[in-house]
Each structure stands twice: as structure tokens, then as C-alpha cells.
Length: 197
Image 1 (cartoon, rainbow, N blue to C red):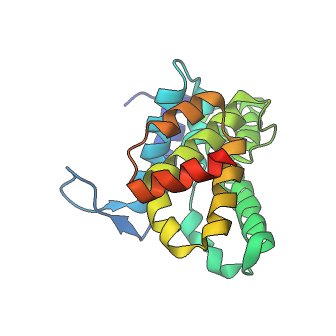
Image 2 (cartoon, helix red, strand yellow):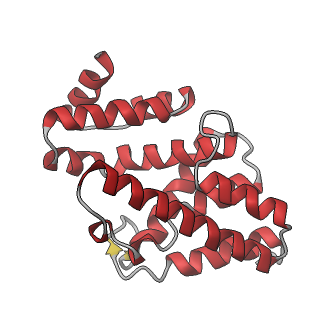
């Protein structure tokens, strides 16, 4: 393994991801994989499709976005939109701080660590390419892996609003990739209805 600050940070992030006590079955894997490690891998895979040459800082921000999320479950916060947004903000703050600390330990300078922290918190969304990459990858992982189950649990009109809000935060390239995802007929109909409004 390379001994660069980037390689050391990536390994440290994945070591923390691997501590997730929740596991998922992954096709081709000999055993269940820690859910957060799998999620981080999906984030990184989407980044490679979104950007021809993502830099190291963007790669680390995308990889660290969900860091140790299982430690503070959504159920610890009040129900409803305000509770959800507070939980999400707090998770971004925690993940950004931890990732920045790992970067400094690995040899990155403060400026680089702080840049990644801002990307993970999605500061400058729509203006900062790194923050946009984190948002795009998160939206694509959601649509690819969680949307169908989510759609069965949420009221129809609320779900349409969620799809519309998600879509507004995504870049044109992410829109293009999202429309190419395999979806069930019911899920595709929901997306088409949301985008028609």
C-alpha cells in the first residue's frame, strides 16, 4: 500500500467504516459487508462516473460523507423535517471533523483538511465542485439503493416533494446518470411524475 497522506487517510476512513455493526449481503462477496463500508464504496464508484479526474480532496470528501453515521441514529432526533435536517447537519459536522482530523494525522495541511470538511458539510453547494460531488453521489446512492424501499413507506405526495427537492440539488450530469438507473416501473413512474410538475 502507498504511504502517501491520501492513501493513509483512505485506509483510516475505511477502517472506521468497517466498524459498522450493521451488515449487508453484497453479490459476489464471500460474507456480509459492513453497511457503511459498502455505502462508501458506492459513493466512490459514482464519483468515478461523475468526474473524469476527481482530485484527492474530492475523493476523500465523498468517501467520508457517511462516516460513523450508525453512532448517532436518526431515531435520536425528533420526527419531522426539522428533526431530520438537524440530524443531517450534525452528521455532516461530525463526519467532516473526523475526516479532517484523519487527514492531518496522515500529513495533509490544515487548508486541505478544512476544504474537505466544508465539502462534507456541503458548504457552497452549487458553487463548490467538491460539495456538489458529495451531494450528487449521495443522491445517486439513494436513488440506486434506497429509493424503492423508501417509496413504500412514505405518503405519495410527500414522496413526490422529496424527489423534487433531491433533483434540485443535483447537477446536470447527476440528472443524466439518475435517469439511466434501472428502476421498477412504480419507482420510475414516481420519478417521472415528480419531474413533470
